[in-house]
Length: 318
Image 1 (spheres, rainbow, N blue to C red):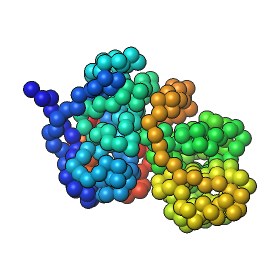
Image 2: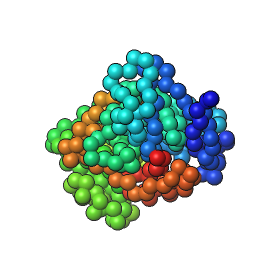
Image 3: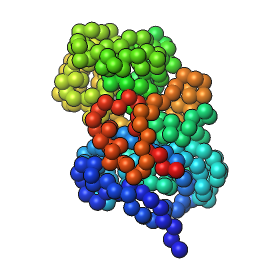
């Protein structure tokens, strides 16, 4: 008999109301893959954008499909050739991105090296908040910008999913870190290690701070990117996270002796292991604002789309 499982599916693009739970065929691991019983799945802005027909919809194609890329769970079965994981191992990861991973479900399958051992001391809920946002921050700051001790880093939307982790990773690299956020979130930023916090609703950030080596711009509109350029030192870098590098703004940056690049996160075992190490060293902690059951995926999307989440929203699956 074919194994079945519960998953959050959508049959058309649209608002959160298109999400529904349904029974679907459980995936089976092929050689080099593992079957993971999902305990928790993080919800990211890219999920909401893809649900609506933007984001990674061009990669996934038309519905039906199952969204979700953040996973924390337990290995249930391994395919031929897998030597790094075994049944019973607790793991976390961001499998397949930007291809479909189907994390909003009871089980996922993916190559074993898309997962790493879950950080000791983190619950599955906390671990599920870490992969996509954490790898985004790590790959921007470490692999792309190569942040070093003594450099100045500006993190926009610093209380959000990517932002609150970027603040901590930049601090762990020895940087001086400034975060933009509403005043209500400044205590959170300071608790995460930010050296300064700027209330972007009270003052234009480009007038309040400057002389940065790196700006992590999670807003990414052309106007916001231009304003971010004004905060850079000569040769400084702006990384446009959600929408890529606007060509006109990129030309302006080059003309002014500045740099700008778009960015998209990739599956990364080395990055997962680095995040795990930072957690276990006490230098990184994911913040989870809300935990909802799988059946409330639509509500989770509503929270994410409202743009006021501190840290992450997570679906509890098992």
